[in-house]
Image (tube, rainbow, N blue to C red; front, side, top):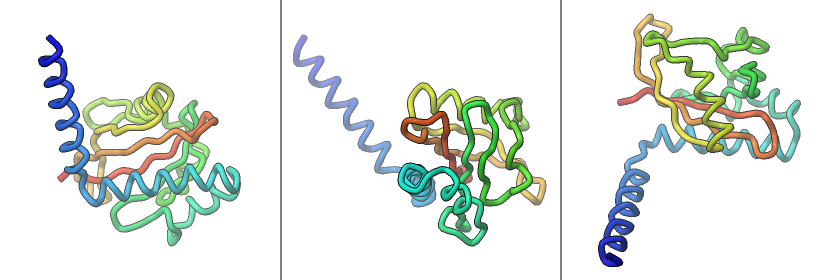
Length: 152
């Protein structure tokens, strides 16, 4: 019995390690940008972080991804690419397959603190593309940051 349990644990750890090793550079960038944004909020405060996240030429926007900051009611506080979304409640927004992805972002941040959400994204060229978004709760606050990348 102990040998079977030990073997199962070793196999599970191996699967986890392989899964982490298979992260793409774009996924790594999403995680890093979210961690940096959450750290900025913690160190400099919400107002300073919002200003930085909203800069299209700032550290939270790249050709691969950008950071969004939102609260647990679904209201966007900062958006590096779409300033028109700031102040809007996106909780009920759905992708082309009917998934309320912001609602899932919030639920994930509340329950686990961080993780990935897969959903569809309409590109500026009107192409419906699969996207994977990393969500990270800002420690001690009812806020989260997210950054996504296209699924390849």
